[in-house]
Length: 306
Image 1 (cartoon, one colour):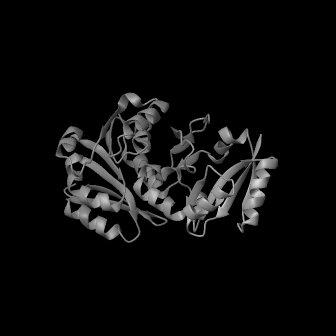
Image 2 (cartoon, rainbow, N blue to C red; image 1 turned 60 degrees about the vertical axis):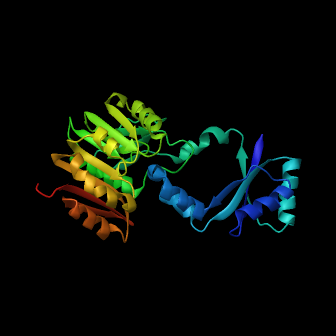
Image 3 (spheres, rainbow, N blue to C red; image 1 turned 120 degrees about the horizontal axis):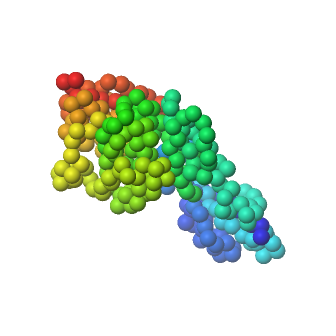
């Protein structure tokens, strides 16, 4: 069966639009709203690496409701009623076979830095780069967020064979997995989300590095016991989070590091970089490099005494 995907402007009030559409015979709505999109990303930083520019642009200024009807007499009758009610719908035909797999066509390998490439798990990569495989599922774009790209580029330069790596706010585990693929012997990860261990272990297994991972759940800033379990002596520590977390986390960062270890932090939006830099300095860290991509910043730091 073919289906009609119908998108109608919500004029800033998606709930009211859904109520009107429901009365016209529509059902099973999906609301696409820029405010919700931004709120979701702000509170789910683990998905930043799945958001590309095209998707962000599609949500810019968006306030719409989508629903689907069968492409037959009954479905087109619903569409006619929607138009007669004053809506101006955008309509496209979706074949039944498209639902399951065609979304994958939008995912392609993404080359990062000089050595890495992020590869959707269903693609057989045969190039010269070090592949990091992920299953992005049905969520977001192609794995091209600037904060993750800067951290991955830093990983290429800082992770040595046999390194011990800590990933704070690990999300999908992409940074730790990349570190393991670059030769890290041991990766410890932590996240406040209790779903993180299953997600990280599944992605690590996809890359053949699950045996190198230990994943913890908890708040590094608020839990001294978690910090004790994480321990110290790490060659590289990643924190791809947000400025509001990095600043209060900074005092604990030196304690995680080996004497010559480095702390890589990103997720710092324009306007917050000076505050984060001050917090890092106050914590006894010296900024070795400051990268800037689009509206985001990344710092690579060592101990001040290095």
